[in-house]
Image 1 (tube, rainbow, N blue to C red):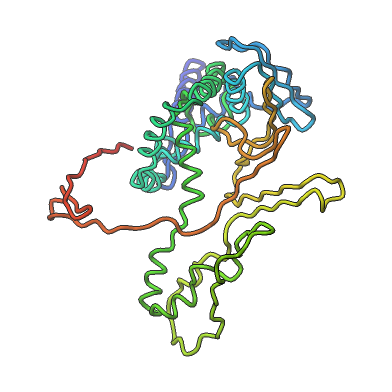
Image 2: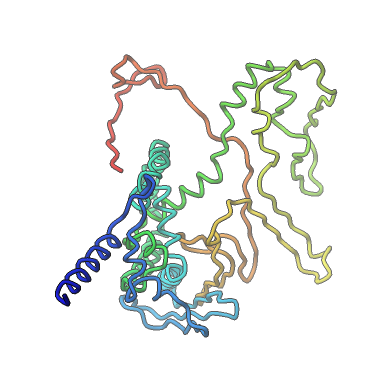
Length: 383
């Protein structure tokens, strides 16, 4: 009897291990392999934070030959001090990966059309759209341009810093998301940084209302359409420095109410943007109580969790800068140094255009471009 109980217990244990070690299909959808997530030695238990957590200075990292230190303030903002630019970039990559590794990698998988590898077929259509837009190919061309830049060694140092942190990890150290989704981080590359740049470009420049506005033009006609959707909005004023002589006449905008526009059973009006984009402003020191100028920048970006920004200070003997960075990209994007402050904002206008391909014949091997036919290049995408 004991022998039978032992065999049953063994069979049940082996079966449970098998089930938990492989993805399962529930209601037609695959779930992650929860065995890795529940493993007491390397699972989510190892990600528990102690009641009292400290962040000591980082002074000794494998494969790092320079001298640098990282100090965290009471808000856990890292302050990085290094002897030169390359060491500083290395440490920025290392520290950023410490806190945002999964975010960095997942967002580059998304813009690279590789989410299917992580979450399965539910991401297939998104991956197809991303690749059809050519964002991964654009990122590859960007890397080739960067290689000719004077800042390329610093980007390589940043990449090396990220990889130094990845190489220091054991499976038990992986961020929680890796364990839940059942995969491990891969090496960081300059291409991944370029992919994140493309992700930002896609966010900032992918305003697209061509189909809606084309249909509205057909329904309303040119005159009414131009009245409803003027190229320049009344609230959009140019910024003219004091003392500048105006050498142009302002455009008179017809504000007469629209009459007899007919009955429209089309909802494109509801899809139009009600904003002009991000905003920023500056106040001269002559108008502030402290006598110091004030700069404010309000970039209108998507809500992210973790946040899209990562605050830090970067300092060498030659310069000192403080501000916010984008995880995956070196340097400070918005911030200030000892002399100036800067910000970046974006106008939310429709800058994406659609084109209809004119094929030579039904074989679709040649397409018309600038009055002549060109042969297509076949690219096979694997998901």
